[in-house]
Amino acid sequence: MSEIVNCRDLEKTFIKGKETVEVLTGINLTVDEGDFLALMGPSGSGKTTLLNLIGGLDHPTAGIVSVSGIDLNGLSSSALARWRAVNVGFIFQFYNLLPVLNAQRNVELPLLLTKLSRSQRTKNAATALEIVGLSDRAKHKPGELSGGQQQRVAIARALVADPALLLCDEPTGDLDRGTADEILELLELLNRDHGKTIIIVTHDPKAANHAQRTLYMDKGKLVEEATA
Amino acid sequence: MSIFGLMWASLFRKRTRTLLTLLSLMIAFLLFMLLQAISNAFASSGSFNLASIDRLISTPKYSIIDSLPINQQQQMLNIEGVEAVTHANWFGGNYQERRNFFPKYPVDPYAYFDMYSELVISKEELDAFAQTRRGAVVAASLAERFGWKLGDIIPIQGDIYSMQNGSRLWEFELVGTFTARVGESEAPLFLFQYEYFTEAVADYSKNQVGWWTIRLSDTDRAAEIANQIDLLFENSQDPTRTATEDEFSRQFASQLGDMGFITAMIMSAVFFTIVLLTGNTMSQALRERIPELAVLKTVGFTDTLVSILVLGESVLLCVVGGVLGILLAFAMQDVLGSTLGGFIGDFEYSATLIASALILAIVIGIVIGGIPALEARRLTIVDALRER
Ligand SMILES: Nc1ncnc2c1ncn2[C@@H]1O[C@H](COP(=O)(O)OP(=O)(O)OP(=O)(O)O)[C@@H](O)[C@H]1O
Ligand SMILES: [Mg+2]
Image 1 (tube, rainbow over the protein chains, first blue to last red):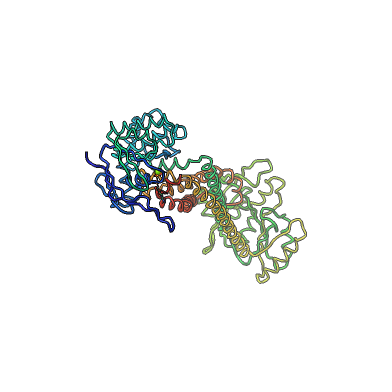
Image 2 (cartoon, rainbow over the protein chains, first blue to last red; image 1 turned 120 degrees about the vertical axis):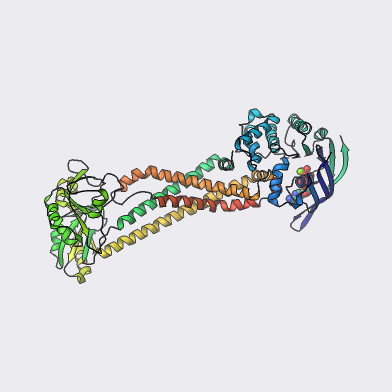
């Protein structure tokens, strides 16, 4: 399989006043297309930071991140925004839906940036909602949906532009066991049947069971690899 | 959904807050339209003044809305240096539509044209005016404007004055036209017989005049004679205020100036408050939306697009508020116009006024939305998401 994510000697330092915090200290990571990778580790070990670098939400202090052969360092911030629109879907712990828009429109949001016609956008959003099993809630606003349903809408939004890579930061962190399992099964299905490459950051050992492999991070380093 | 739809939806994030903001914007723009229209109407009625230095104008001391008794005329004529005295009333009234504004005065035909020698009328038509009870003579330009011909019956709907029989419909027969002497500006005057007016008008308005015009034999003594006239009536029921026509129109002009100034002050205060309040609301709304804006950036909205969204929302809000205010002003036009129409000229909203209201709305939107838009632009995704 060809590789989709390639991190070389990745370092990230935050400067807070006089203090510099070295968050990532030399990460080397390759993720193949179609992979389902779980990233675990104690709080503050740098998991979110690494995920943000892979998704082009932030720039590394040193090292290279390339995704599908594109070196993200070479892109300006607006080029990076356009790149994200097409190439990655993000799923967060707190769903981050727009409360004023119904499910359908939340899902449609990334398509506003494309050249698709209005009817095509509506159709694609409906398809994404169908994949996550929420067609019957299309007209509901986030406030009218349960946490699990909101997370499904967020997943549909991440899917709608058909990116190859899905990045999930503790997607089940705010959900009960049963709902969390449903979300994890959905992600597994997206990986298996739709060929999405998935990287999931999680504290939940059961979440890792759904992944093909699990990496552990500690103090800004990848420490050990376990294959499920 | 479109980008515009997204903007519109975001506007109603907190429905009550948005509606209250819209309400205050609407009231501000209503006020803007009304004050501006009133101020414009006054300014346009001010341009009809005939002014000359050898004439005095004597008005009721306290308010131009009061009137003066006709019997003051003889007392004035007794003053040395007064050569002639004549009178007029502000009749108000509308011809067909309120927008057809022109001053209408009941006057003494011979005396009036004698006084205003700059108005030129033929001897025959002046005689006809004096002899026709319901006769009227008008400025030639006015007759041309409405296509009136001699012999036409011109109906005027009274607003200040009704007739003794309760009717408000006054009908006049056009018996002549006059022009201004070369070099004088022609006011669009409509003149009719005072004799007929005072006979036909309801009792409480009989034998009253709006103001006196006094011609002096000796213009050097204008100030002294004006003073003398005012002294004469000072302790009567109808005190006067007398000044040369010139000074009178200067005072009128300066009052108009004051009015424009006051209007400007009021509106500045109103819009200053609006900018502060709405600006505060907008920044508050932005703070609540930081995670949402971060999400927009995450899914690929560029910094520029996000700041345009925020700015656009604020402009949209102000424009909607402005349009509502303009519509409300139109809804109130009829009521206000009929109340004020008798005293001021055209009470209407010019295209310029509407355009300036809309431009003002856009400018306020940009002022209010500017800083939040910049903040939204600077927002980094990673920091915004960490702040949850
Ligand atoms: N923007 C920032 N500015 C300063 N320090 C930061 C910033 N982002 C992260 N950090 C620091 O970097 C370290 C790693 O943060 P990160 O969010 O990547 O951890 P994490 O592994 O995702 O933790 P958690 O499991 O709690 O989510 C922490 O010590 C954090 O305080
Ligand atoms: Mg984290």
